Amino acid sequence: MSNKIFDIMMSCLSDILFGKKLPTDESFTAQELAEVYKLSKMHDLAHLVGASLSKSGLFENAPEIAERFEKEQYLAVSRYENFKYEINRICGVFDEEKIPYILLKGAVIRDLYPEPWMRTSCDVDILVREEDFDNAVAALTDRIGYKADGNKNFHDIDLFSESGVHLELHFSIKEDIPELDRVLSRVWDYAHKTDESSQRYDLSSEFLLYHLIAHAAYHFVGGGCGVRPLTDIYLLKNKLDYDENALMQLCEESEIGKFYTSVTKLCACWFEGEEHIVLTDEMQKFILQGGTYGTKEAHIAARQEARGGKRGYAMSRIFAPYSVLKQRYPEMRGRAMTPIYQVRRWVDVARDGGARRSMQELRINSSMDIEKVKTVQNLMKQLKLDKHIK
Image (spheres, helix red, strand yellow):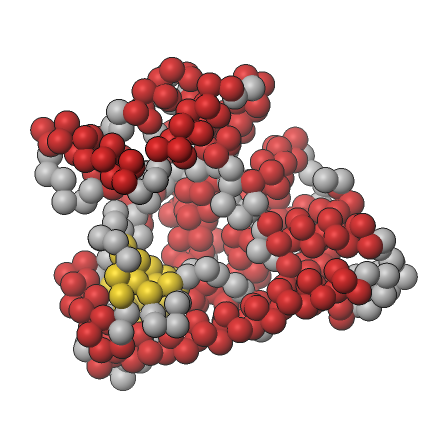
C-alpha cells in the first residue's frame, strides 16, 4: 500500500469529521479508489471515507467503487438504528429494575460524532455493578428475550437480542493487565448519575478518555488497534471539556503515559499536518498492517521475548499459565486447580474446533522473521508498553 492511499483515507476522515475539506481540484483513479476502499474497510472506516468522497464529487471515474462505499454507508445507518433501538430497550429495563448502568465506548462516543451513525461498532458495551450482574442478565433474558452465548467471561457475558444485536454486558472493565486494572477497577468512582429519573451513570470526561486510551493500549500490545480508536481519542480531546493534568495522572498511574503522549503526537500528524518523528512513523506502520483488531503475527512477536523466545512462547500456548486459565475460567479457585483446568482447556479447544487455529499459531511462532520480531518488541519498549505484555 502506498503512502498516497493512506493519505487519501486520512484526508477523507479529516474532511468528514473535522471539516477540513478535500481539495476540489483533486482526482483519483478507479484503482486508487479501490485501494482506498480496501484499506478503509479494513479499519471499519469505509462509510466515513465514502461519505467524504461522495460529498466532494470524486466518484466520477469509478461508479462501481462508489456503489461499494454507498453500501457501507447504508449498513452503518442501519446498524446504528438497530443499536439505538436495543440500547433504549436495555436502558428501559435497567431503569425499571433499578439497576445502575454505564454506557461504554461506541454507545456513548457516537453522540460526539457529527452524526451518530458515523461511529460504528460491532456490539453494544454496557457496565453494571458486579453485585447487580445476575439480576441484570435475568432481567434482559426474561423481559426482552436476550439469550446468553456461552458462560460468564473475565469481565462480561455475551448476550444477543432476537434481532441479532450483540450486547457485551460488563460487570468489570478490567483488562487483566495489573497496571491498567488498578485504575480501571475504580470506574464507579468516576461516574455520576445523569438525572434522578434514570439509573444511567456517565463517566467523567477524564475517565471516559482514559478508558479509551487504556483500551487502545490493551489492543496495541495484543497485536494492533487500528486507526479508529485513535480517531476516537482525538475527536474526544477536541470535543470534551476535560482536565489534561487529571487525565495524564490516570495514565501515569497505570504506566501508559508515554503511549498517550505518543498517540497524541501521531494524531497531530494525521489531522493537523505535523511532521512525523521516527516513533510515530513506526506506530503508523504497526497500526496499518493490522487493521481493526491487529494481527496474530504482531501478537506473537510482542510476546516472544516475555515468554522466553519461540520455544517459551510455544510452551506457554500448550501449557497456559494460571493467569490465562483464570481469565478463561473465572470460577477457578486457586493455583492448585491449574492441572484440572489445563486439561479442561485442551478438551474445550478440541471441542470448539480450535486445534487447527492453535496449530496455525504455533507454525506462525516457529517461522517468525527475527527482524520483524525485534521491530515489534522495540516499538513496545519505546512506548513503555513492554511491561504490560504477559
